[in-house]
Length: 553
Image (cartoon, rainbow, N blue to C red):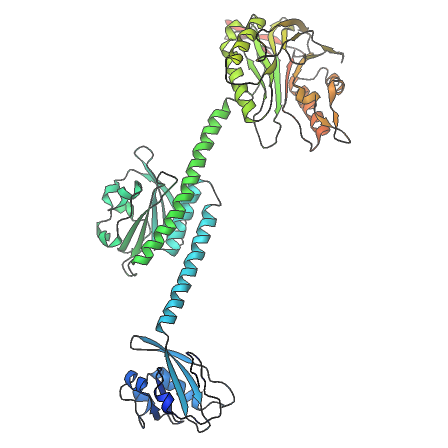
């Protein structure tokens, strides 16, 4: 007969008796009768339970849990298998496997399960820690907001690693952003001037150096700012962990336990560093994203179309739609540069850079900045275009652009325009009777040829009449029933003819709406519109009764 650990090889119903082979078994074996008297023990059992011998009372020589299990087993039905029982004896965890016999005796095989149970406990702890780290990564990576990542870090640390947690972010000038959490309470954000050297290891952790062991940190010496509000009771142990980032430290995490709780052991400090590594990576990514978002917002502010208004008695309105709904900038643009005073010309510009997306937007920004620098030469459109063309040819860009320049001035009740096209579709003039004219201007595109030429058109707008400048994203927009027919100039003319007498803003909104309906959900190029309208009625009003008046609609 072969004996295996944790099993019983004795068939039910056979009389238990310790033979010579059982006496030499490596496992302790104890045989007791139904009354709880020891019948036989082998050498291993005698060494484990001193005093255990035939005739001894099991209650006196064995642990109480084994004696109790024997009473239950001895009185049970022989037809049902008896379950093993587990208990402690000295520093050992034993599992006792019973084999009841027909004569009422029970053979108890005792197996040392200390190592197995310890391994199971460690495996269970490791599985829980792995699951916790996975949850940590999921929750931290769910947001690219720095404050949100700080909150998640201190909340998880205070709930699972310590009684409280304090996150110290990199200094912003002389101030350090802090996030503190106690237990399951909501984290708190604050900013304070602190001295990192007052907490052993904190200064090094903020620079990304390895942590100082907790046994080297005196909890009683912690400054008040390092103990979160609401902690309660004295600090028993402290751990300081660096938060490693993407090449640059993301801060440091201070973990605190109360004096009544167990101090951090070596394995817990290692686990805290694993947690800190994930938190630092998430915080670093969030901070990098925040910085890039700020830079993008700053740069984009100069690339976005300006908000237009009435300037010196003339209405201006613009509309822009990028080729992708997820983008705000592209290759189409418009600008209005108001004159210094009434009576002088305001310069309006609408243009279209070859291509779309960010690359086109970069060139758009350069063109807008160059034209703004050339404003003192706005009296001569052809000279402005020549200088702009030279600037583009000398740049690293290989793209070209088309545009329309419009110099606008109020003359009595009418608006006078000078329109110059540089390879761009000529503007449409909407008269008060609904008729639509095309401005007689043309020219070569910008940034492609060494020399440019242009012809300027002079147009007068009566009250209620509009000059509409547009990019080919409007006329070439494909849509309709089958999605492959261009919106075209005829539809555009019909649309603006219905806008006779409307304010500039209404004209732009009307054309944008019709173009959007035509496109539907289809793809399209960048689209831009700029309307210049002579108001239906206007008069000069004095300022302070002395200074020159301003036009009001």
